Figure 1 (tube, helix red, strand yellow):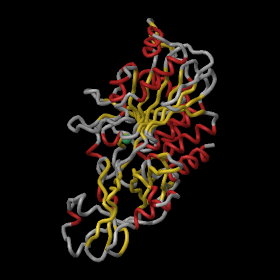
Figure 2 (cartoon, rainbow, N blue to C red):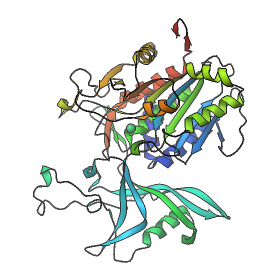
Figure 3 (cartoon, helix red, strand yellow):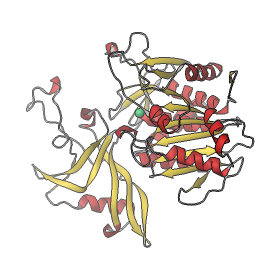
Length: 434
Ligand code: ZN
């Protein structure tokens, strides 16, 4: 059972080289489980006992299941589908010194730049093509060792091990081909998309490292791979969502694009996507006015985005008391300034659920003098103000091209999310009933 869980996870990670592929793979897992796709531009028909999902911008997805008997609000989990990478510009190849063509790229999100150097890279994403008189979106994965960003040799840069700064417009354009004549990249993408070059209209293409996600360590206790932040949480929440028993509340899974660039896009967590879907759904079920407000007051959001484990070489960056370890369990994140949404009530409730499911929980606070990163929780809370908690899985090398996490932690997440979605929770005047 446990082994299968990790095999499924590795398969998902390695089949999701871009956020578009991640969303498509989540959608196909939902389809396999009997969920039906709804389109925002078409009327919805929803029936008790059935599951549905909606995509926006091809990389954000919201799934929900309509219970037969609704007694309380929404049980939401949110994660993100994107990871720091490089976006390929439409201008394609840049003729460079040494009879080389490099690709014109631009950083997407805050990556550890040097981790992208000197390793095979490829290209994946979505393209818009003209097909039968329409503009159609198609997934593209070149799926071959295609590119590399070569370092300057140590003989020419003796300071390199002292931390030479890299320039995005100089050092980080990947080597694509020999020659001087641009145009071949566009032909390659058209061929991969299965269209004539003239029918390739526009692209959202990104680089990805070719090294696959693997289990590593003496006893295979670690997970290493690209995009662990936040595909681990996206896939773990999906597994819990699919495995859960009906609880009388409305289970919702939200996976957002654009977290790494601030979420302020049409399909990001700072958009109306979640509220649009939930309001529309309330409307279809006849939840209007006060009953809609009551549903919101009885709702709970788990914002699941990876957290920092204490680094074996640099424990000094972690807080002295609240420093999670790999394979120590799910991390609950706290911030006095509420950069994380956890408060006493959401903390108490979620840790009760984890305790009953025998899932260990660890505390994380940023070292009090370091600001740390923001995440999905308070961005979503600004649009949908419900009880919420920020959690994640402990990991190392966050935002490197290749990251490390704990294999057991992923299994804890699946167990915790299954329990969370299955649990009947009532928010009443006398307190929270579990
Ligand atoms: Zn993240």
